[in-house]
Length: 247
Image 1 (cartoon, helix red, strand yellow):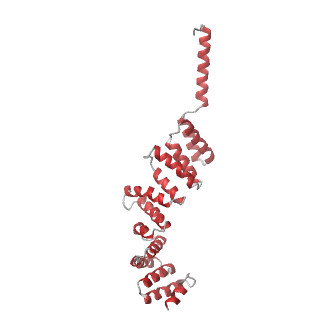
Image 2: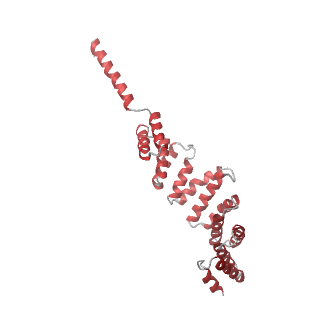
Image 3: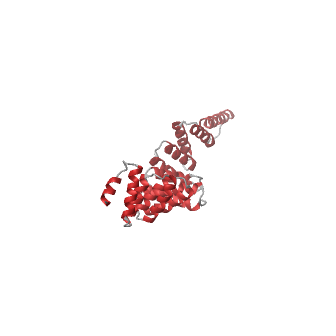
């Protein structure tokens, strides 16, 4: 259709104005991303969440936006809600640094322990032995097996954790418990002697050693350990009963 010079010029002006308005009303992805990051870093969680979702409306395959939404949910301890967001980000960008670890942590903290083990185990294979990352992963995987009642499976991970931190008493007690429940009685006694070097009056350790010796048919040794537990803590649970039973 032909138009006069005036009509064509007017049309061009209207289109130019619309383009300017569109550029001012719809900020670029980089601007939206910067806004979301600033809100997140300043602790304005609700605003940050809104901003990242705004990014997704324009770019539904933005892995970074899904990852940050997962992080926001996790920071609010909404771990189950964080999991699908992390999974979506991982599907879009499997190489994003730290993403698989964040997913594993969210699974662990939401109680999905089997899925946490499956997610974290490949990371442990790639981690440098005895590094801080490896120790952290060994703790998480060992504790996940423990939470599932897979005590024998937890033992190797907890052994590595205690070897990397010779002064850590709580993990040694946890290792001794897992050894006990998986019927690895010599492991209980070996760990017990390590515990004594850190705390010579640990009623809990004495009880574990007593139970292990009892299972090994060393009843006299078991009674000595139960007596030691009572001496260390007269109110130690089951110590009096165990000693009385053996007597």
